[in-house]
Image (cartoon, rainbow, N blue to C red):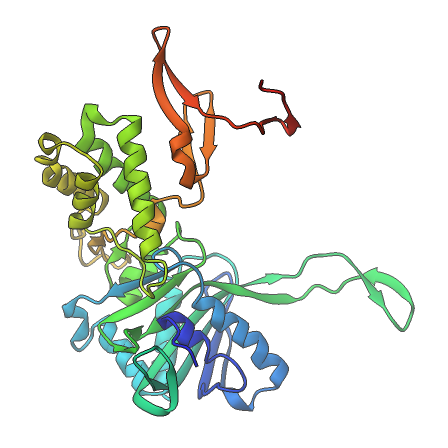
Length: 398
């Protein structure tokens, strides 16, 4: 077996031939935040048709891009002591979901912090995975387990009425109005605890999943998980762009921005086979700008610009004015300014934009576009080949 990245290695376990999920628990919640029904079953005794549907949901909870849909978040040290959020999740995992009071307490915490007005299903599973040893060339050895990874995973899925329509009835050989029923959607959010990092258990981190990267559900993260809030993928791009613009100042011209884009894409390409995505630390960005030709004079103020922009994007939280006010649910926590190169760079297209014109270029051919002054006017010049189309119509450019 070839070595898989962390999330893929765990996803690979959600199949009948290798599944070892011991327990599945669930709570169906209505739009008024009432518990409608709960389930608790031995997963491996469930009908095969149902397990396949659950596998789809579990796999989806570990899908998407690292740093966008999937974010590794560290616990503050304070949350690892008795009464902390990490300590609670550790007890939940240790119970193997056998402690009904503890599981119900978890449901209550989700209902209190998950901001959604419709019906939804909270799913919780417990599993253990014998981590196979690995040879130096990346081959997994199923008969040589180095460690047992014990984890819980939560998936929160919206439950919606199926669409109205006509349905065919075999007995009558005709069509009638279809009976609408409640259907479980793919997960909106979820998490894996502990995180699975470097093929090992990491109780100091949690892997968080969100279907929509721009909707992180801050109350859920702050209060139930107790971790710092990551800045969203869109915010990461805005922060990076502002750092570049602030540092370059009046030197922010087409040629240097194109060079930064090309160099950043080259860095991403060099790391494409790595199981972990490229993160843009302060030093990484500084080196990127320096190697892209930003002058020493401009780089002298880089540190100040970086601190200014990142501090504005992730301000230090202020305590509530009235700590005894029970209505104030959200516990403010400091945001993390970790940026991923894949969220900042567009490896599929290079875009040049004016108020009236948008030019999209193959990122590997940015050399075809340049700026120059013609008859006293600043122009964007595109080098063309013999094949040119306008609105899909080939034109003669001789």
